[in-house]
Length: 276
Ligand SMILES: C[S@@+](CC[C@H](N)C(=O)[O-])C[C@H]1O[C@@H](n2cnc3c(N)ncnc32)[C@H](O)[C@@H]1O
Image (cartoon, rainbow, N blue to C red; front, side, top):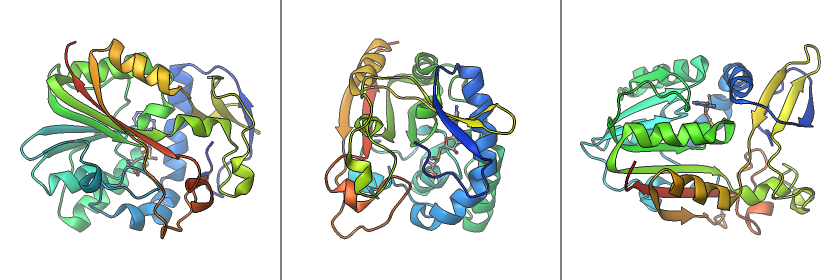
């Protein structure tokens, strides 16, 4: 699934096997540290220093409107990377903060804070242990951030509900769950379903030299997401599946016009916390 892996990534073998939360975190933090420079060099211009796209299709929050009005709202971005999205809404008056597992991604965030003059206060942390008091935020969001890297998603959603105020909004984008069936290949070869949509066994890359897990992605079906959100008191308000714009010919990992014309690559959920 990790078609974004950098050239300098250690040689890995791909496996499918159960991986718990600690192992996922210990793999993905260092992986994003290694990858951050290349990620920002490759995608930084597309993302924009203070831009807000929900995924490789380029749908912006200004177009999608999933967060609602953000001015004067307390907002947390989970898996904020270099903070582009949070910076975008800070420029619109949101009191937005970032949280990310990768120190190198946060160093890029600081660099762009200084270059742009729009600073997003950010902390190093993980989606499953949010270092904030109950009822701290009006909005929590994640644009392709932490959620598909987390094993203990129950805990991450519970933490989100805890730090949100009642009536608060939760929005996130993820790889569209139907993509799990296909090889992560932007060409036509990536259009042939080759594994079960219902097989939740994580995608794992193991470092050939050390035998350590080097990268993990977790899969949930659309039904899993609905059950998780409803089970933590959220009412789902949006499920956007952005279409691939005809003129858009950018390839991002396994996302491309070839595949995007036929199958959804991104799912964006919006939900409101009705009760805890
Ligand atoms: C694809 S990037 C998305 C960041 C940003 N929205 C962007 O578009 O560049 C995914 C981010 O999630 C972070 N991440 C991965 N696992 C995480 C976790 N368990 N908790 C918090 N952040 C995590 C990574 O470090 C990385 O910065």
